[in-house]
Length: 252
Image (cartoon, rainbow, N blue to C red; front, top):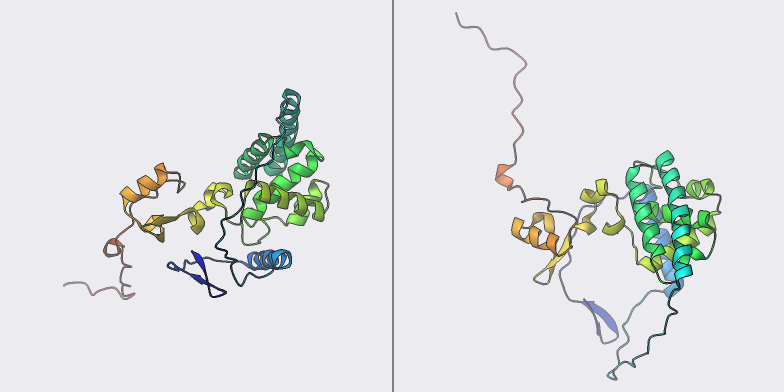
């Protein structure tokens, strides 16, 4: 929890560290994100505070979608899914196929779907671009691996268009790096963000908690599945002692 104190920011809570392996491309991408946010909002060094209560702003009324717009959005979603299915089948894997379908359908269900503005192939490329961005697709250490600029080129869109559309999707769906909701199922075990839960005011790794806590966290939708009870350290198999290469003498 960040707290303002005499013009500075202090924090209340416990900081813990987790082992995360960052490849060369991951570090570069995170550095680019930092530079973009710094240029957009600057570095926050103090929190504004005022004793006056905030002024409530009335929400803007949104136009209700018509039946024609829903039908049109459904057709666009089908076209986009056919494009992402074909691309992911040829260049990536089935996990990307399923996640891209899920994202296209979620964007299509929004009121006045953004998919109705722009070309379907640009949205299809942006969807795959976003899923790849979450899972570090452009890191050579990842499998499958593909540079995001090459991905955009296959869909026939420029790199700037792919990045802009992807940023729009991330903002709309509140997606961040290593977002568990959009992580490949095969990589959930490697994603620490999928297992961090709050317990008695502390952030803990659910994989190290008891089975009862894991079951409760799963029922609340906080973790993707129940990993099972942690293995006690005393039950971890010890490596066998190296045997001598010289055979023992035979008994007479």
